[in-house]
Image 1 (cartoon, rainbow, N blue to C red):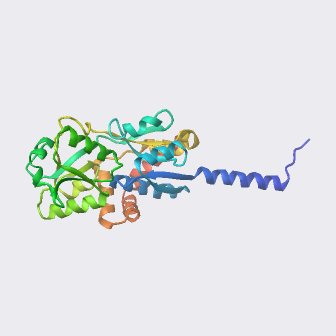
Image 2: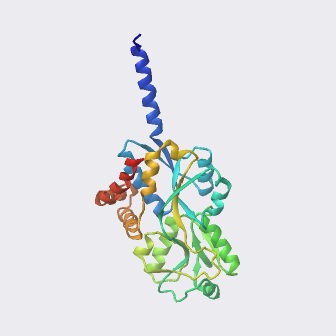
Image 3: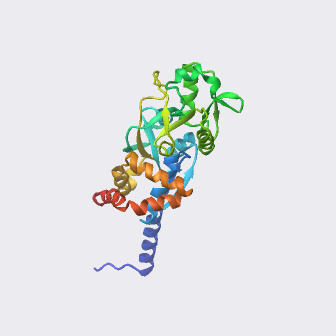
Length: 287
């Protein structure tokens, strides 16, 4: 007997399939306020929306990011610094969250001063703390207190017995203070990392950290909720193929900084680097 399917059943099946596809293409990408994170998150939002994804950027603190991903409220995030910076954040979830391939090699992290400041180590900073006054007291300017680098800086103050206080604010506020001090050739010490556009715009140097409080350089991976690779093998393959050099990432961040808008800057970079992005996307063809 020839099977027949009534039109309403066909319609229901098509509607269900369409909903499933729409749901599969709706992703929440966890972000933070670090310059390179803003840059790559907006780049991938543009790229994926051109491939019919619906991408929501969720800007959250580090602890909330990991907890939200473990609860399946966040699908993926583009920065996991290992083996040092994000080790403590990952530890409670390392059996459930999926750590994928690296896209950036050998980061830097630590206390940074302009090159015109004639000290080279964190120990020397302690000896000349009075030169680094901010609002009337010896200060290390940092970013938000929930960040990994803020915790490391507290450890550095204790380890090196520094008579300075860490003052936490936002990255833009810290960079504004750095820019002002740099323009006036004044001493200043900030918590900074690379990749970051500041190293292209200013002549800066890390203070030597012989106690390795800030580690010895990390690799940056992308990571996701449990089951993501099975749910979206195409995007997993694409992001696993993604890799950026210091030069290409620096150009992306610098473009965003110069235009003052992450979407416009990322679009300008994307338009100029289609071949590089197409190479990443091609990896999904075999998924």
